[in-house]
Each structure stands twice: as structure tokens, then as C-alpha cells.
Length: 237
Image (cartoon, rainbow, N blue to C red; front, side, top):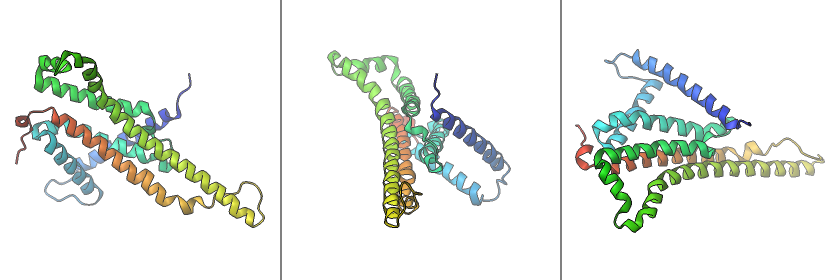
């Protein structure tokens, strides 16, 4: 059995993020609650509060206290998975197994929400609405969210990786061509890559990675919130 190289990257990223969570959590516990946090820890707390308020707007205060940890993990894990290629590693989110698992977890939460607020009878009755003949289409529609979310994230990250590989290949060919003008033969050092790729990395890795993380997380919050009644989404002020 051959183990995909992505597995080692996933294990490494999980370990590093786990260590970071523990270390940062202990430092936050040691903060003086009477003083305003500053520096890196202040930014972390500000980011957590921002995510909490975003979740709160979609699902209400009570549910947001339970859902925010999951949304935070999604934000951090997906974003770092998207940009890890900057360090020469394979992006875990360029593996369909990873994105499908993340989308499956979100899908399960959506089904739990439908069961909780609609009831078992209403849940299964929705499969034959508005007519029983719609049963096959409703079954497909029930799973389409999971498939579309996983493929969207997988496709965009994979496309970005392929584009960067083509750009590096083109930079290598250009380097060889320029070197040939000065009498060098064969393949030479890819000296054009540092000139051509930084801005492209900023777009395909950082910007695109952030946008894809934002889309996945936003869809998770909105889709869960859509299955909740308005009275369950009250916000405490």
C-alpha cells in the first residue's frame, strides 16, 4: 500500500497547529483580565471575537457559543492548508479526500440542525416535497451541498497549484533562453522565478487561499443558520 505524501503534510500541520493552540491558550490563561491584551495575543483575541460575532449574526448567541470553536478550527486549518505550498509542501486542501471530509462534517451539522428544529417527521417528509415524484431529485439535492463545497475548495486550490507549476516551468524556459544569449548551453539556474513569481504567489496562495477559506466558512455558518427558526437566532445585547 502506497501512502500519499499529503498524509505526512496533514500529520505535520496538525501537530504544529495543535502545539500552537496549546501554547497560545496557556499564554492567554496567564493574561491579567484587568488589562487590555497587546501584541500578538491581542490580535488572537480580537480575531476570535470577530469570528464569534460573525457566527452570532447567523445562528444567534446560544448556538454560537457551541459552533464558534468549530468555525475557528475551519478558519485556521483551511487557511494554513491553502498557503502551506509557500513552504514547498503539498497543500492538503488540494486533496479531494481532505476537502470532502471537511464538507462532510459541515453537512452532518446541517442535518443535525434540521432534525433538531424541524423534527424527524418533517425531515423525512421533505424528501417527497412538493410531490413524491421529486424523491430522487430531493435525495440528490440533500447531498449536493457537501459535494459542491468540497469540489469548490479542492478545484480552486488545485488550479492555483497547477498555475504556479506552469509559471515556474515558463520561468525556467525563459531563464534558459536568456542564458543561451550569453553562450550558456542546456538548463541553467531558474533565475527568472524570483522575479516573476512573488506577486503571483501573493494572489494564488495568499489572496485566493484567504478567499476560499472565507467562502467555505461563510457557507457553513449561513447554511446552518438557514435551518434554524428566527426565534432560535436571538442575539443577546
